Image (cartoon, rainbow, N blue to C red; front, side, top):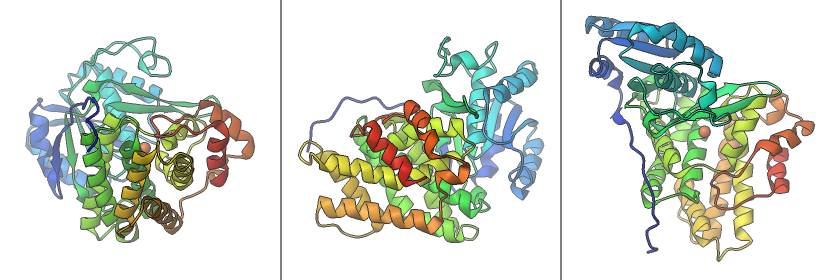
Length: 394
Ligand SMILES: [Fe+2]
């Protein structure tokens, strides 16, 4: 066994996991007071029976609900406007309910309510002010299994356009205080969103597992997440409305993906996702899902050029290949091949769109590459190798 590396592991939320757990939300809100600001998307959850039941139970528990709705991905302007609207209203806790976007919006709003002024100077791409970590207590309730935002310490805000960007508001204290992960809420998630979100969670698990910042703790959690992706990914995509077991596997895997990415970092797929999502209106999960196979192939090819120095990273890819394919693999080579075959099969089965479907052309590649990086990948791809990944998915 190799020597333990030094590592840090951030706090995780108080986790309430399982079908029906949404019903515990009113009691959890009462830990902090009686006035809750709900931040949701504008459509599916708000129109659901689960929302009506939750509202009734919350009101019955003496909770006053304030409500902010978001359409699309959260922008700094949305955060600033919502904070300005609710700053004087003595909000006791913020509750983000939805996919990654409402969860990140709620996280940023909870962090900005105690402060004066705009969120912009605190974003990593501006960084002219340091946030001191004060926030209103925050409860995250995911309704899709993807970003793992219910367990991460950053909120990604977007300004989409020719000079667009995605940038994070980040602090260890911004890890949600409570995560309520109820797989029943995911039953109504459409198949294409299920596929994109599932591939995002899988990308996060694998990138964190093979990351240069990985620790034995993140490895254990990432492997557990990968096992559950193997069990749940295709059934959740194919029959997600009726398969609560598959939804539970994926909800658990996504939660773990958030925990490991917060502690081990990510790789080149997420190094592309920021700039591409800033320039083009493409969902984060689609960017990750479409690039994941080609990027993993490029990483494995680069690692294979020096198999002795890269033995641990190759072994990890091979182990992920055995887990995801469900097949015993005799050699590292075989395991890596199984991983690539499984990813190719899943990406083809789900029909994840190519970048060109969103208007990305060859002439856009230089500006995407100018702003992309390898993050904590176990191998550094050069610009040409990174360009080949994009070209493979144009
Ligand atoms: Fe992601």
